[in-house]
Image (spheres, rainbow, N blue to C red):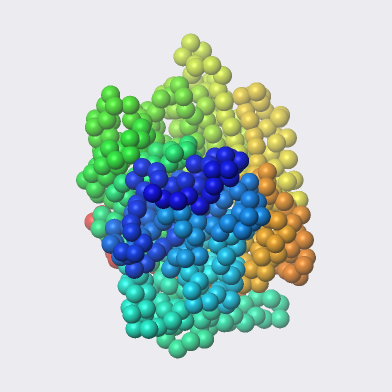
Length: 625
């Protein structure tokens, strides 16, 4: 019988003790003496968030298929347990074995969003692993970072032994085999890291030096060990059906954010929105076959007992067999109480037709990411939606019985004018008016509710907007207040609701997203002064961060409000995502001109992703470029 790492007394004194017990349905248990590699897979946030992460479930299932590897899970302890563990010197432990993380061979950390960076330091600290890779000894775990934020690993470079750039299904087997081989031949930590740095997609920060110009921009980024590549190309699955998926998803004891089976239907996106990092770094779009998805849908629902399945992708409407897949799921689970959820749909007749088949209209609202309130601004960001399409889509939804709509916008986009800002309220008003003008009174399901939310724009690496300046906190707030005032003056104000994101948090996200190695000291100082769970608004303390910037002499404006020159070397330029810098520059210039670029199925724009030899670039209907 497993001995729990926490006593009954501690478990009874903290919130949600089930976060720390393990033992869930489909958790994997092995004999630690019978495996060669122990891997602690960490999501640096609370259990309920981490257990909802698809990538973690995919790798957990994939690693544990190997008989020589035991992969276990680790999450950030919530603040109540964090305090107890520090006072009582209890080391952070993995859920399955309850063994200390420090005893593992690898600690793999998913870096999903910038505001979890202090939680990464919490995990290292509580695991009794030195924060700096330079300070780690032979018996410390190899600390690996992966996930979306690994596309600019530099602000975290001091804290990681290596980063895995790209999709995890391709190189981990080679990495594990290499680790065993180095150990068998009597090699040490350094030998392994040096050999790993020569594998595709692996970046070992200590083998690279950065020099700076007097103005603080990067002068050069160069390898300092022979045989280490100057450029690291992202890893990508080209044949989606050949990649391992989740055989038996873990079923949490607690209600988590994504309390359902998640079926990934495709990767990548054809749309080319110019602010969207995921749409760029996951190019090209690659689909799973209908048969593959049918098989996994049935198996996963049977192996978990879940009553909902979510079809996951960046833009579900663009999956070419969506209608057939939805019809299959409806027929297969008719009368079995299984709900189908479809996030990331476009506001068009096809999507609404699919939605009307699967959603309980009475219970749900429709969510549409419109991003901008005017046609000019939608052309700047390459959203590919006209006002006519938006209003027709809204009308179709209202005719279908929906009367609650959520709209997502962005404020602070490049070239934004006052007219664009006010356009957010005006477009929301037009959607409400469509309901009252077009739906007869006797057919209405009460008053329409249109909730508009705006986040603030952060220029992300590997997007055409990576050259853009970012607004200051004050500029963001002025824009939000202007929009709020405009909403108040609308005729249908009672049917409209508007809210906006925290501006100071967005500024910090901008520094962490675009930062270089000099930002690591700020993250460390903020952590030592109490920053933790920064993505949770009740725990975010901007003053801690401002103090950390001051202590480290790091200028926020250098990373945020400064517009970049087209020839500047970015901290992430050593990574090759397949999409060329020349293409991104061309798209940046198209944005300034308000020129729309067609989506990948309409016309190939020569972004560079063709060299992966797969996906939408090689669909039969696609002409060679």
